[in-house]
Image 1 (cartoon, one colour):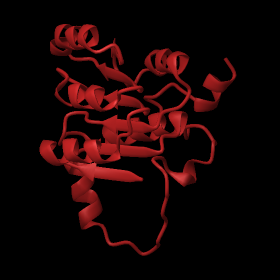
Image 2 (cartoon, one colour):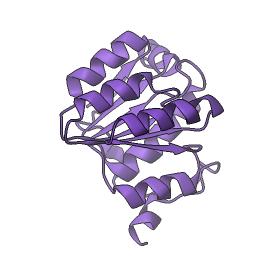
Image 3 (cartoon, one colour):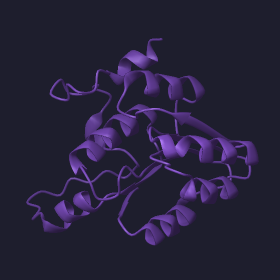
Length: 178
């Protein structure tokens, strides 16, 4: 299942509904850890890998990491190959992918990041917080009914990242060969 939210309260409510105590969660855009703390408290026997590249995140997330043994914080840009590789060394799959990159800005970047990470880690569920994507979905008129039942797009089909996404220097299949 893929859920879209913009309101932070609804986003966190959705997280509470889909998370299971044993889940492995990859959180892209944890910022200072407001949602991370909620996730960590639910994951009694699970693991949370939180990522953010903002300087404000570092001290607060390092403190949360000390407070919760199930949090692993990585300071880095989720668009970079090295960061995806670093997470892939920790886990090759995720039960939940949580994407909150700027909330309302740059839906194209948010979608590309979601696409790459979800096609690499194949989550059961994904939750994306972005106003632009919701606006697009709610405005679009569908002429075809294409549906994915999981937390990633079925159309991906392990083909790797299309060459037109040049700002991401990663073919997901290359991770599996390392």
